[in-house]
Length: 272
Image 1 (cartoon, rainbow, N blue to C red):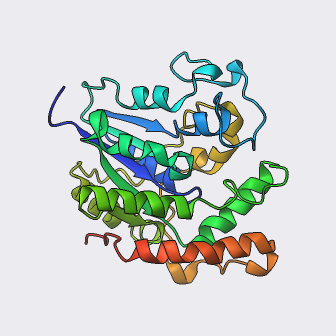
Image 2 (cartoon, rainbow, N blue to C red):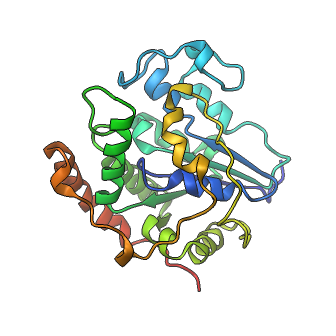
């Protein structure tokens, strides 16, 4: 294996622009991009944690020739640490809420010891409002948010685990910076993790992202149609209509704000 190869994981709650971030990294040459593998064992595997979706059919799975019975955390770890030695960068995007706490140590040791863990956060008002609208459009019966808690607590717990065990503060990006200064923020991220920045990585041609679990395809509509980061100044964004949201979503926003605020303190800044 080429010792110069970089291996980077981006962790975030849903609806924090992580798919757009992932699409940006896809523009880099000699890069293996892998997305949301841990959703498999969490939602659909033989020991799945969530029963939000109906059981997945083998015909609805498109992942390395696997069957639904193969959707285990051990199998996902094997796929993530496979030999991609022909690539300069292995970039992985996933959600911490899909991880059992028992898996945390595995993701910083053994074949994962040389992975760089990074995080993407977003103001919970905007992330969870988007999550609520997306969950509603997916017709997830009895669920205003997917996951029900929004995913901020699990992200914060995993972030603190990484910070404590590795003795350094992981790289964190705020989605608001991506929207305000996309080039400068991606440049800062690339420098922080040691990967090349390409001036073309904030705009692209629309390309449908590959979806391993076909019942989740509806969550990708916006990024599939995107042509780059939508540059928007904070003062130009419409206020989130909190009065339109169910009480449990409003409470989740309030509960999640403390985790966002703490992580926001450590966010990298755009590089001008």
